[in-house]
Length: 153
Image 1 (spheres, one colour):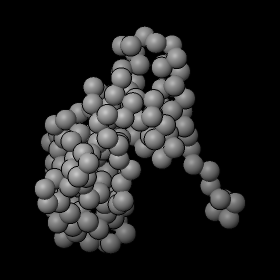
Image 2 (cartoon, rainbow, N blue to C red):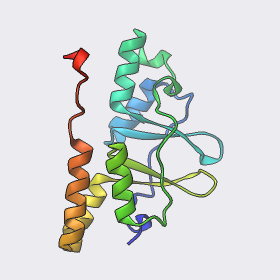
Image 3 (tube, one colour):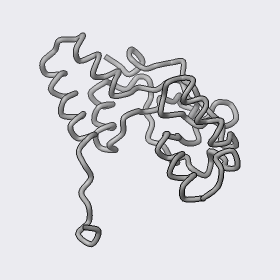
Image 4 (tube, rainbow, N blue to C red):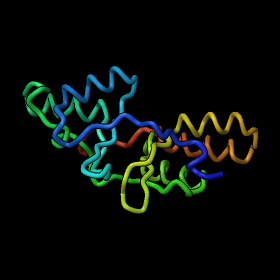
């Protein structure tokens, strides 16, 4: 099974020049905490999470309507192709400790997003114990607490 079979194709996005306030409104309206950031020709330039936006606003000490998404977005972005196998997508998510993986075409244009939610539901539907274990192990790696360096205790 490939990523294309599970990915969400209709994805809310924003642009680098969108304000953090406008991005937050989009997140609230769409019920998401993540927006791919696209530039010209739908090319993926970064991703923005609700946490990234909040941290940027607090760090800048300015109103979110005065700050562009480009200030808070993460870039470069770990992505995958739609023909990637689900096991490989799980490995990518686990290694990078990501909850969502943008799916791009060969030109870097956003074509969808696959999330840990999509993969967990697929494991439940599929009923394949080996795939279920692979999903469980990947989820465990993704949500594992990051260790705090000794000098930050």
